[in-house]
Length: 290
Ligand code: NAD
Image (cartoon, rainbow, N blue to C red; front, side, top):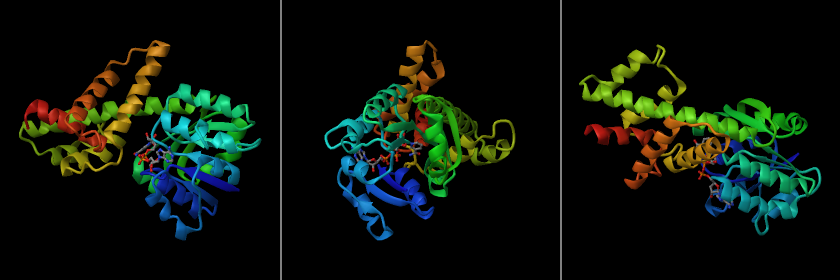
C-alpha cells in the first residue's frame, strides 16, 4: 500500500516518520520545500502537487492547519480531487470544522473517493512516540480497512460515527484542554502570589484529584518558562472558534470555552499567539501583576 502524506509540520513530520518505520511506502508533500528535503534520504517519493499525490498513492493522509488549507489541497487547483479515482481514500487528520469535513467528503464521493475525518490529540510528544489518540468519523467499513495505518501512529484509534463525528470529538477534546490549561494557570498564579513555591504546590497536588494529563504536560512548561510550540495559541483559537460555531449551530451555550477564547485573544493582542498554549499563564500573570 502506498500512502500519501500532505502537511509535514510539528505533527505531520513525526506521524509520517512513524509510517515509514512501520514499513509503508510514502509519497510526501508540503508547501515548505525545506521540510520535504529531509525525506530524500528516507526512501519517500517527494511530489509537488496534491494531484500528483492522489495519482500515485492508494490512501492520502492530510495534516494541515485548518479548514481553508484542507479545502485548497483537496478541491483547489491541482488538488487531490483532480487525481482522485474510485477506490482511493482520504484520511484527513487535521483538526477542522465538522461541516467542512462533510462538504469535502460529499465532493470526493462524486469522484468515487471515500473520506474519513480522523483528528488527533496528544501533541508533538505523542506524535513522536506513536501514541496519539485518534477519533474517527466516516464509513465503518473504511475505518476497519485503514485501522492499521492509523494505529501505526497512535495508541488508540476510536470510531465515533459518520463523517464529521471525528471533528466533533476533537472539538470536545479542545474545550476540555483549553479550560484545563486556564485552570492550571489560575492555580499556579494563586500559589505564586500567595508566596508558596508553585513547583512544590504542583508536586503536592499532582497525585490527588487535581492531577491530570494537562497538569503534567503544561504546569512544568509554565514554571520553566518554555513557551516554544508545541501547540500554538493561534491553532487553539482556530479550534475554539470552530467549537463555538458548532455549539451555536446546535444550541449549546459554552460560557467557559468562550471565556478562554477571549483570554487567548488578549494574548494575541500582546503578540503571544505563536507561542505554546501553555503561555495562557501570562494572561493571569498580567492580571495579578506577578
Ligand atoms: P504546523 O503549522 O506545524 O504544520 C502544518 C504543515 O502544513 C506545515 O508544514 C505547512 O507548511 C503545511 N501546509 C500548510 N498549507 C499547505 C498547503 N496548502 N499545501 C501543502 N502543505 C501545506 O501545524 P501542526 O501543529 O502540525 O498542526 C496540524 C494540525 O494538527 C492542525 O489542524 C492542528 O490543530 C492539529 N493538531 C496539532 C497538535 C499540536 O500539538 N501541534 C496536536 C493535535 C492536533
